[in-house]
Image 1: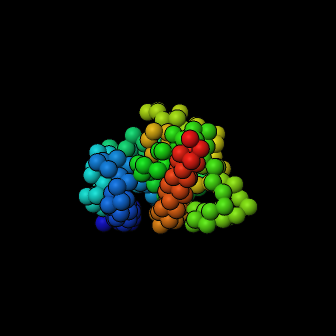
Image 2: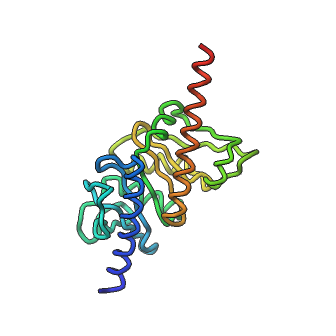
Image 3: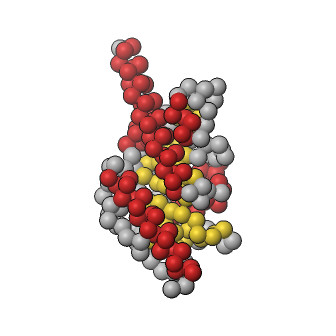
Length: 208
């Protein structure tokens, strides 16, 4: 087995394990969501979970290599969203990108379509920001099927210190230097967004 094939299988095993974790949490229902890991930077190549597969049952072989445009390099069918994964990696320098359909991010994007503002919460430290004296705005972009358009919207609102993007009525993208950091950031952000939406509802109910 060549070094490239071995590297891809190792990446596929990590992506399959992370996908199974998120599927068990209800964040990748059906065949939804996709994960990616950068294989090389010059040229940019990513291993992306294959399209149309149950994310709780992936194997190390259920990955597709894509280029900077999200197009398959050696065959296979990547997710239609692979192009956005590639754009996020290219712009942010992240080694891994995670996209799931957890409900809290979608509710938060619905409530705050111009961006979700978070502050003074201890869990922000797990997201890579300060718990106090720091205002964090998670960008929200409209949903669409053209990944080039979504990529442009992402890039316009990109901030190096805010490793997340909400896509309205769709899901959330979070990234990190590797899959483990991306996971930790995603889990913390999901908690933060659940808190934000729950407390916002309480305020509205209390004022009625």
